[in-house]
Image (cartoon, rainbow, N blue to C red):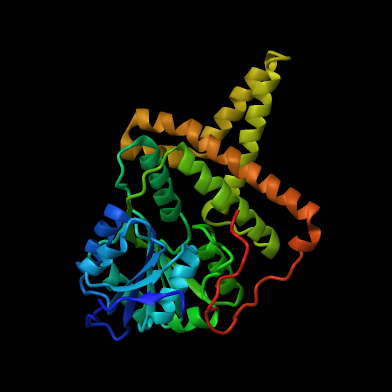
Length: 366
């Protein structure tokens, strides 16, 4: 590939599993977080067969950190997104298992061991993924709330998963290659991993949520990054994917209780607004608010156990805000599907294209 430069620094590390495991880390300007992530990877016991870092158009020379840790380094001159970066790493990897780790994720020392055991003990398992732990790396409230919510959702979900997560996810290399890897039309961190999981499940392959595999997330969340990631880069394209594939799965963030909570949130806001014309509407709003709390008691009890009463109280408006913009994203996505019916009815991606494409597709994930 003419647009990828392979640096000489590389090494292979033997380990005790019959299956070889290649770790692939896509990064762009990863900095100190990348250093912490790679440090944990090099301390894994047993170590992976190889560690591949794909620098996606670095402008701060973070790629030099990969050299310091002796990783095999692949460099993309201009940023093209983590989907393409992971595909490039997978094309170069030699392991039986591809273990994708985000550059702001720190794995536990036994992560490679857990993955090796899971695939060795279950030959029918195609892919697996873990979850964030309950000790997020950043101390500010939004980072704690967002990562703890992610942890809770995964720990409460079914182990037989309906999708895939590439922040800490592993897949058999042969099947990954046969399916064409991640969809490179997603040019930003988006839902490329979810989309791959949908293709795998549609073809009858098994994906497991390995709840014991818990990693630390180092990302710092604020209101801007939360809205950009959750609304524009996740909720909107995920809605389009759901409508395209007609897959309303009762799992993860798509559980029935979440959908009902979205409806209750809008009912609460409507009743609250109605109180300016009829005072009795405020009582109705309070009733909807109580129903929202009752519906979500398990997660609020979790926040209470983890961080105390004041933290739990502060999560309420943010959690309801999450339901608000999730519902808004679905409404926008559904409206788009009606306005652009030809686009929404285009056929799904083929279940098993041959080989990872050499060139990125065009549209950017909005």
